[in-house]
Image 1 (cartoon, rainbow, N blue to C red):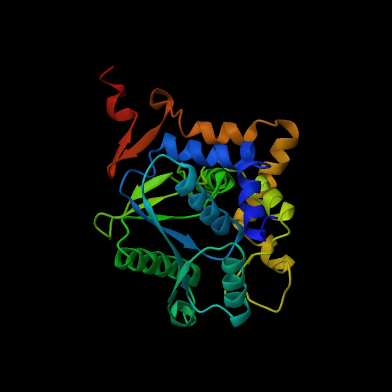
Image 2: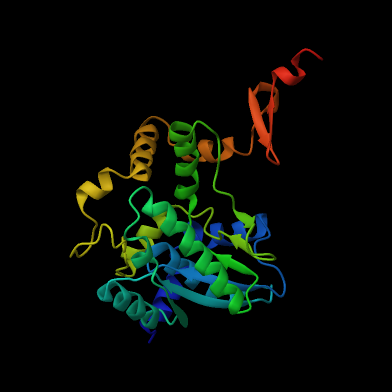
Length: 281
């Protein structure tokens, strides 16, 4: 008889092979995310995405043909004790050998009035890189998925006035020799939710101390409605009713940028405009 952990692992390979396992493996291959001899710090926030990522990494270690090592890193920025407990219990249930790093990031940014979320994100990312390097890792893996990618494209256009996407991997500018990878790049959030429900799992949804209140399954409705990312989710849902391929089209648009029909672009920090070359054609 299978243990609960074995059932969870089996579901990734069997029941969700098409929706999760194959897209996960394809992203690793397409973008050469993990190479021979790598030591990868899998960063776990306690949510469904990072927990699934950890299990996928464990499975590719067992079944893949690339030899590498993995560390499973939980950075505690000052979680409520109940949230910390949930992460630890899920790690035990799913047999993920986590290393927990203590920090006081929530406390440090508590008095920041202008942009606490921006400061918190920067500090958390820096702490992850630093902790990963101390563990001997050369890469950190984050649980961003396909929906995060296309939502980022829309947010950059509608709120930033630019076209940016969330890259599948990045070299760190502050930590020499370190690289960030996103192995769930092709995995859709709806399939992650389906996997979670199939296995009757319960994960953290929002652990931010600024918005934290006693809750069971969901963040407060008013928090969700004010989220720019939630706005993008709803916008994509609207588009999908008229065009079921809308998500893939948004994703592909960042691979098919036509510079001959582009007013301007930035490359290596240098801004170019079509008028710079127009008179010479």
